Each structure stands twice: as C-alpha cells, then as structure tokens.
Length: 241
Image (cartoon, rainbow, N blue to C red; front, top):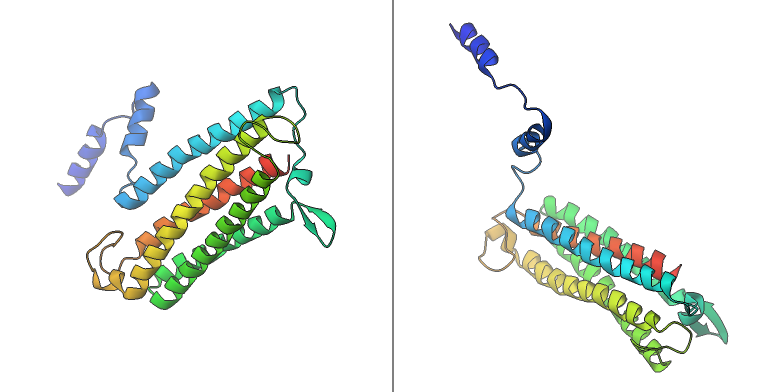
C-alpha cells in the first residue's frame, strides 16, 4: 500500500509549467538560497544592491562628462602628485590609501572568521584594527581634499582644465568617504559589543544578534568589503584613467 501511495503521488505530481510562468515558478520554489537567510543579512544585501546602482550612476555620469567636454581633462598624475624631497611623485598618496583600504578588507575577513569561532578577543581586536585602517584612509582623504581646495579646486572650476573635474571628484570621493566613515563608526560599536560579550550573553540592545550568534560581524564584513570593492573602481576610473 505504501509503494502504491508513492507511485500515485509521482503520477499526480504537477507537471512543470512552460514559458514565463515556468520560470517564475522555478524562482518562487527555490528555497535553498533564501530560506535560512536572516533578515539582517538579507537587508544588507538589498542595501548594497541599491548602493551599487548609486555608485554606478555616479561613475557613468563622471565618464559621460569626461568624454563629452571639449576642454582637456586634468591629468590625475599631476593633480594628485605629492612633493617629496623636491620631486613630484604622482599618485603616491592614492596608492597608500588603496593599500590601506585593501589591507583592511583582509583584517575584516579574519574578524569574521574568528567571530564564527566565537573567539571574542581576536574578533574585537581585528575589528578595531579594521576601524583604525578605515580611519587612516578617511584622514588621508581629508588631507587630499584640503590640498586640492588650497590649490583652487572647486566644484565649478579648477586651474588645470575641465570644470566638471571638481564636481566629479568631490561627489564621488565624498560619497565613498561618507560610507567609510559610517563603516568605521559601526565597526567601533560592534567591536565594543563583541569585547563586552553581548553576543555570548544575549544582552539586549542595538546590533545584538541572538545568543551565541556573531552574524552581525559577518554583516559588517559584507558592508566593508563592498566599500573596498567600490574604491577599486573609483581608483581605476578616476585616478588611473
């Protein structure tokens, strides 16, 4: 009887739908990818997706302005050069900033790894190191802004060429720098909670996961890796092009 029931179930199972309805049914029935994803991680992915569109629009606007202007675009190697020992070294500050931010992505990945192992001290230390690297990046970016403003760069003009250079620079790097700044703040908050043992005791409060769950560290890692990845595109399209 049991075998007959299974055979009958196989025969009465609905056939796959054809066309667009079949595609929609396949996506709707797939529970392996999203069934066990927490709301925090899902919301972070949605936020990062929306942020991808914003940064993408900014970079497209910058490339459109650069290719359409009849005025020569300023040479980044000259604009972002630093005078060291009486010599102009092109893009040296930008190279250091990029190295720092990419290194912080490595320390963040290690923090997530130790978080899943529930090694509280190492997780907090690596998150604090990541925050320190991020703060160093923001400080260098503030120095870069100050130097260019002193040299006469404004959103509407600059002494080297196309007027759109200033607005593109301040808009893109400022928006990214804001993301890094907020990331540093939330890293410090999360590191404090990790060091205090909130994720082990289940202490109530903001950004506190379930008892014994360090998932918020991974969520912070997703955000931080995204910020690093965006900088790679900014570095390639704005500073190297």
